[in-house]
Image (cartoon, rainbow, N blue to C red):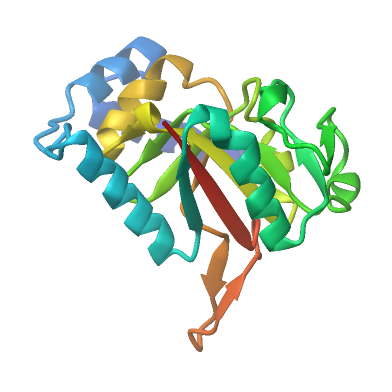
Length: 217
């Protein structure tokens, strides 16, 4: 134990010497602010081009994107759920009830364990922001978007994204969520997929196998 403690102390001593002294939350923040950021932090495309880029990226990932007005959300949601053969779905607590179409069974998530979540055919959520450059939807643990587990366990995810929440670049998205950095945040770039050493692509390993996105606006 003495040897282990001495080794730990020596490592910390060397870290402090390399960084100019003990680290505190304030010094860490100062170092972070001092990092050069010469990369592009703002988009160059017009709004319609940003939406088209976001749509292309998601379609490249095998997601389906449907654009609609807010008054048409329930209609288009019903069409997507019928096309996917879904009937019983989980809904993030706080999602607008008027967006949910009749003829389907929607159950509001109330913190059920994974084995209960797995019994649902899918989940419907909103989103905080979306990134066109990477085809990414960003979800946070807030009303209407739900817990991380609830969006990862079911096999199907229908996500509602407002067009005004689509930005071009990753830095723009982080600027949007910087004041809520303490929230659990999930970045979704298309359906879950991975590949083994033989490059065999498998969907649904660590999230939904199927992603539908309704672009509202």
